[in-house]
Image (cartoon, rainbow, N blue to C red):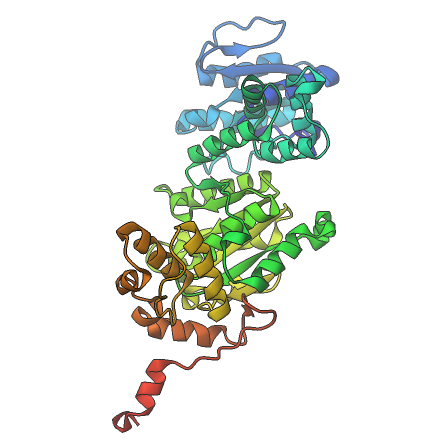
Length: 492
């Protein structure tokens, strides 16, 4: 339902306090003005710069005084009509007890004389005295049809606007932008390239997300060919995201949870997945959502998820999720992490947008059991240390990348991860030494955190899907630590 339709319903029902959450005040005002003209409602607007303005009327003595503006709405009353006063960015004045009291009294009086107070602001900041008096409307970002209309308005010549699949790519890139941001992006593209292209749109969108501070847009060039192993995980995600029926909401893929020791390719897989299936990858920094004020962290979480929904179709990556919500078990943050985690879980279960969520974790013991339940993820995968076939593929990738001689003697890579193979190749190229010598500077995670790796394998066995081969993961390795202890009779 559009802003005009929802606003019209509330006014007809005489909701005398309406809060419109919008970053696009001019568009919201135009929509409200058109509706008022159709319904013959009287409209007044107020902001701190221009004061009170009433089309076709002169009101004296209000100026930029917010209290005078609230009281002036009663002068617009007609015996059988409706008067609407739109207060722009009025959340800035709600720290005043006098203004809060005046608004409360006016909203109550508005039920009798059909005067409607409308606050137009980019965020919802209601004092407790007004929480029950206002109804909230979200001014949605433009949909694909509206973005297409904006593009056609900017590109006046047929040659300036692509059609077919190329136009769909442009609209995918513009999803999540405001109307003004979309106009600016399309205009920039025309200036640079003579036609509307996705590149300029992606550039502006990247800047927009940087301003939010909590989301980062990744658009790398690495696809699955740059990632050795993980054949079952690659096949699962590709098939889920590229199936013809994914447009049906009932069959829409939800995402995967990836568990493994560090360095097994979880983060690299997520970034390569976006390139492979033609989707942008959004990286959510949960730490940046934390705020110093009460309720600020939860509000930032909701806003970030709202942006993610608006940018669909996309891939959302939350790296090391067990650390991101470290306080979920009540570790001294007054429950903030738990509330943020609850908001994220609700969104994960209920969102209908085409967002494929990839969460990664190194320590399963810190994840609450409800996180991995059915219908939050399509699959939970365990990425074990690569086997011989996967290691050969990884060596081949990095020997080529770092231009290393393949005829030299190879180091012993027992229990190495992909990150350790890459480190060996990089050090060999950096120090200009053979691989055998470079390997002396690599200490495998399987040795430094042997107990942790064995614990993860034991937990994942029978509970997770295998990333390397179809089916359930089964641990085929026995802990060195357990074998050593069993031979020591003093411990029996």
